[in-house]
Length: 539
Image 1 (cartoon, helix red, strand yellow):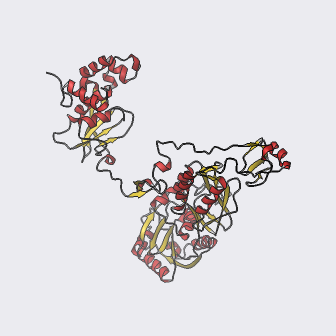
Image 2: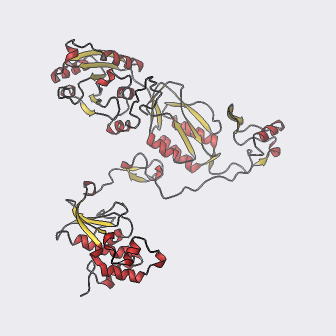
């Protein structure tokens, strides 16, 4: 009796494979036996899904001989490079995994030579290889029960859909502020787009205007534009140009302005205007060599959308360099620079850059409000006077350095009811920022959190990946922000408090995701001579 594979005779089986895959690939032929091996172990009537551990051939076997396809979401591909597939109960994840077992290939030299790449493709005998595969059947496979991880169960949803501000196409908003393609994850190459410019010999440039700034470098001394765009070149300039290595120069009007392109200076101006639209930044002056330095237009906290910044810079022909997100800056201080890389920038790229820069502030300086803070200092030892309080002075100093004041101070023992009452008193006294101290560790006697919850704390986030300062609390009483300051602030000059307080005063939303990002650079070196904020901490 002829052996059936996936319910088909050998001839029918090969016909279906050839029609689907274009030729009877050995991997696909084996794949049908693997489908049968895994499926044969599942209880009758099981609603199953499939998981392939390679993208080569095997997914085609699943799609051809089971109801599972990539399109309907019942076939998942997790490419580990192993030739294995799993069929599993779509609800429980219990299933069976079949794989090509090298230990079982010795009796089948054609299969071993093909599968283990011992035989070059040109030397393989395709007919003999197919014969061996049908002879071997499931004997070259191993099958074992497995439990598929929860991440591979259930329907996968794209979630909310957004429109990419760069390309204008729809994409899952979970991918971030722009689509993956505009982040650079695309199979397409942007064609090099440069206008055809013609330079003239320096002797022919006399009396004509320079097309762009020309830089002169004096090693160890200076690097600046010796000639500016629009400057008329005179006879007296010829020697200087030649000393700069300029035997040919680009001059205005030679062939006309290239259509579809923007001059580096014009592009820099357009980008600077877009980046300064929020009012937090301002250009330092006219462009020089296609570059404009940007200054802080006010005192405050520099806030940078780092993800969108990376996308803009991935356009390659534009560059926006900026200081770290979360940096405190003063009005007039240089915070970044914008530049067009080529002499003439394609309008298409400039338009993409402008959309990215204007969809929302890419960089801004957010002013710090002058808060009337209230401190709730907890701890029975401080409340009873056994230990002198040091926290009030620490908090006062940090607040005053940022333009705020410590308006009220209350003390409470390690008692949730007393802590709740103290928090309410601070609110009634008109405090628009509540800061609590101590009582925030894992000690069962630390009840500050419970007291704050009893007083109406909302949106509490406890703990952050910054050392020192892991045991930090963020939350709010209505519109009043709440900060739980860990005891380490008494012993370390710089802690998580120094990273969070400016952000809170600037009104920067701080959720779990924002706190998680502070883990990168969130380890203080406790240097003998502290130079914060001029150090890597918090950056």
